[in-house]
Image 1 (cartoon, rainbow, N blue to C red):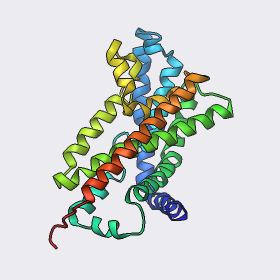
Image 2: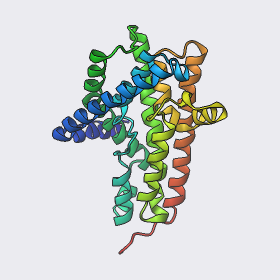
Image 3: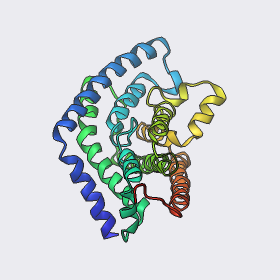
Length: 266
């Protein structure tokens, strides 16, 4: 485990070196947060309690979403392009020869990346939102601790989804199209555009049952207190269940892909 902890620390330090990119990301997230916040204010003024949220909860959804945007890779930008490049150019053969599990290696690196992005690109936008708008943020430290648990599970679910997409390169060689489709699905079904509860009827139920809802919708609902008691345990269990299923699918796909890997060019 010390190896994977070292990989996670390395992932944190690697992303910490891109200071200008981090500053630009903080500025962009904050600006888009204001745009979305005023859009939500206009929408909730016309439809109060839309989707079961009051205006303060809706604004909290906006700013927490901006804070988690990079940490859970809602718009991509994680490890998947690098892994696909290594598959295409044959460097994946070196990775498979390492005395380390391929999936755990990339998961550790992604957890380190997410930890930096949460601190580096998450705190400032959420603070700006809390200073300029009336957000529904809890004062109970336990609620924040549960939120961090939900965010950690969200990062794992997001990793597992993107790992599956990245492995497509073993068969497609160029998996950029698959990754793009995955990003679009994530943006829509995670609640990045609108909370999933605003959608009508059965469509909302289906959207909330898909794994992408574990990436944003569930962590925000945990923070604003929509879950309590057994409901809270069920929400965290929902995330943990999808994480286990998707990681298992990734491991099976990895085993099938590497059973007979052909390195192009030699």
